[in-house]
Image 1 (cartoon, rainbow, N blue to C red):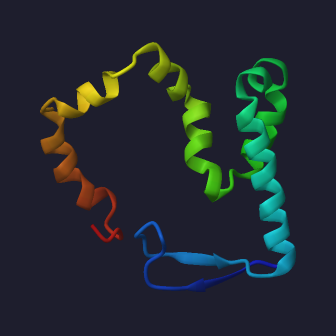
Image 2: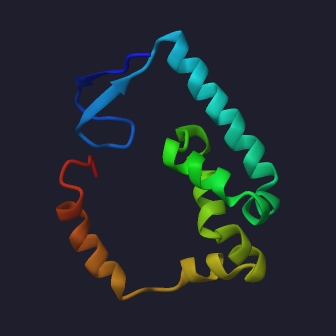
Length: 117
């Protein structure tokens, strides 16, 4: 399937760039198949990472579908395991002040110049 690009204003992530247009049935079918494969992998994540890591790596290189990307990254970086080991820590950290926030807030406009903040 041919994927065309067109220049648009702002994409769904708030960035100005070229956006791929993949409205053909073949592209949609491929995306749905990949989404289903990722959903199946995420259901059996620990077993898959232990016994079939090469499959995970191969599928990562093909690309993680947008619809499952958040769940995939949580699994890939081990955040789910860390949350189980440290219940309530994330919520606790959210309530604390951080001296780093001043620098992060200063740097955001420079880092994401094309982002609609």
